[in-house]
Structure formats: structure tokens, C-alpha cells
Length: 265
Image 1: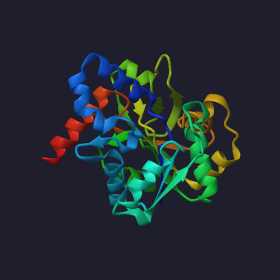
Image 2: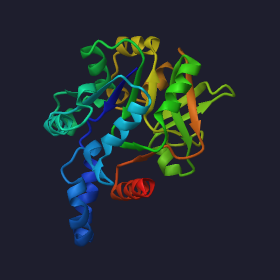
Image 3: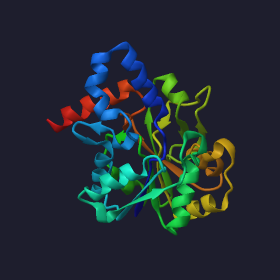
Image 4: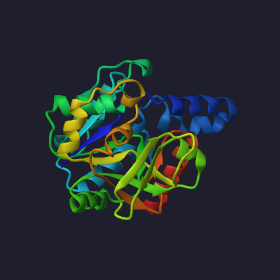
């Protein structure tokens, strides 16, 4: 199995939070700016090392054979510098999507299609967001895919309505087959949130490649499930516990940093 880490965002929310912190609490800003400032979110330093390294170590334990990281022109050199000094560089390939600003971005689906087509990938692939620090073993997710022999996504129960409104929202039957999926719903129908983590089988990849995603459909990867879950079976790997930290704010960064430091001890 191959993996694609989507890392072509421009970190606008996180940078805005850092700018606001500079005005509100200059001491705290000076303390953490070196871990966050000017970095792509996957390269933010969490408990002593870039966040992406935790993800790669997790994928390694799941026996993923090749990892692609798709980023943008702004951060491509930063990722390449990091990759050249990383112990698993032979299994990693960094791909530049060619965009130079948030306004030019291809969107997560656009970046996924770029990698699939450029690297001629047509077998099963694990796709995840580089913005996230995952708190569970990917091997369990891969085992679930192998059991179902169909495309799968991970979901966990979330009580916070605001978080539900900002993420993919899923429902499923007693066999865990997904029967509805919405991206960033105004009125969420369930408490099951999707942390942008998928394994797509060859049949799903074929549909993705053949589909012309336009407008918002190319910007949110959950729209693949929105469009296809009634055509092909998708199953939900479920957890009652939170599966990730989404590093989109200073609070998220601090919570993730504290979590990993405790885990290391």
C-alpha cells in the first residue's frame, strides 16, 4: 500500500493566530514562534520534532511501502531540506503542485489527482491530511480496510457542534457502511466526525480520476464520499475517542504538544 500526505495548504489560520498572539501576549509569542512561524503545518515542531515525522512513523508501523508528500511552491524547498536529512528518505517523495499562493491552490482533491496521475497510481492508497497529528495506530485502520475489501474512512464521536460544522460528517448502518456524508454541514446530522483519513481501493481511484471536480468539490477531499458513497461501498472505521489533533490554531498546537510530551514520558 502507498500513502499520500496532503500538505499543500498555506497555514493562513495558524499564521493569523500567531500574529494575534504577538499583539496579545508578546512573551508567549516569543516562546513559541520558533516552533510555528513561517512553517508549513506538517513541519511545525511538536514535542521536539516536526509533526510529519510522527505520521510517517505511524505509516511505517502499518507497512506502507511508499509515501508521497504533495506540497506547494512556497514550502517545497523546506520539505526537500527536511527529507534529505530524514532517516527514511528512500521511501519518501515530495511533489510540488506548482501553486504560489492560497488563491492559486489546487484544493485537496486537485492535489490528490495530481499525485495519482503523475505517479501512475492505480492500486490501493491511504490518503491523509498533513495538518493532523494522529493519536491511534494506522495499522488498525489498514487491517479494517483489508477486512472490508472496500474503500474506508476513519470517524470518531464528537460532541462539539462547532467542530462538527468544520469537518466531514458521516452516518452509517449496522455494518458500518456509510449511508450519508456531508462536508462542513451547517446542521450536522450525526456526532461522527471525519479527520480526513481514507483508504481508497482501485475502483474508487478510477472514479476519482475520471471525475472533473469543480468549485468547492476540488477543495474538500470529503466530497469524494459525498459524490460516490451511493455508487460504491464505503465503510467507517469508528472510535469513541478522538483520533487526531488538527493543528489549526495556537490552542491546537499547545494541546498536541502537551499530549505528545506526556506520551513520550
